[in-house]
Length: 433
Image (tube, rainbow, N blue to C red; front, side, top):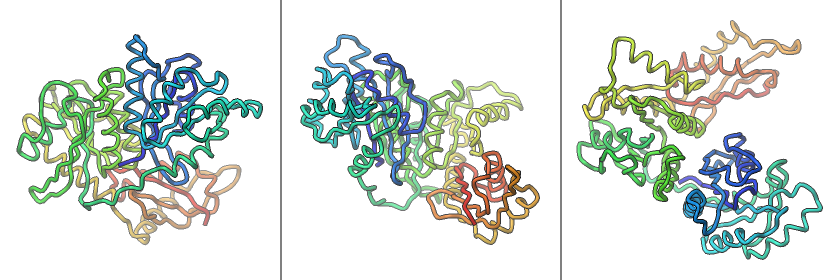
């Protein structure tokens, strides 16, 4: 299971700004107005070689009759339940409020590592004002400025000390997670593959509440299938149990080797599908896209190609993934999806001999060398594949700092073209020769 850091606190203390800094994104809306973050944002962060998931919750408001504020409170409660570590953010400019005391009371009973973070400490004069937060009885206070980043390094140094070590894998079998929005047919696919009604299947979105691990050993294939609860649009997450399912789905995705992303052919690819895809890409997972309910689409000879092109455009620049068109209810091409997942798993673990890499890639580089920059010419002398859970390639050259992104993508495309890494994110690095 992955480590999850949940950022909680009352509205407008700067949770989203810290989230954006940790995940190096601008995904969370940041505004000086309480209650801007109405739902959770999920992102991947890394500190001193440790990768973890960050959850930015809505602001906590106690005992409110307002349904929106009540929903935020419920989200925070579940984030506390599921998190490995909790960052409790307060605002040094307003001091400790009754709402802060209410949250602190819940956190004291959570039995989870809690870090009290005093935000908006933008100058040394404000440091003395942080002492008021010791009244929470939650230990050390960490003064930071999430806007400038000061103090965040010291905070993260302590946070990662509380991460759980990854549990040893009890099986070396490949793990395939079936993910997607609710009601796209994930449980029906499992039932069709294993030939029994293992999972409850209903037309009601969100029937599956938790991740289910299934050992598959038929027709010469053996692997673990992970059936996850549907990731529905966050604006529609109204039940506690559904937020719980979302957290479980993220864990299952990070645990898997390959994700099978199911998309509803009738509804088409939506932003939530793209979010799942990019989360899998960021976590360096193999990816297969499965278009279900294809039997419900009126087709001509151009429909499949047009649909496939639309999907590849929306997931670009990483568009080299297998796309399989199926109908689970009609059992059309469902085993092709498993074959594709097996191929992607093999691609993910593929090791190219150094001699073969150089034999293929050096002539290409010689014919199409990196463009000169500031009168400097980059000479790539040697290529090797590094050890890792997904393909990583090091290109040794005289001036690695002058390689630009377009040429990096050019080399990645050539690696894909000659060695078949379909469905697998590739990492390309340039190092000093």
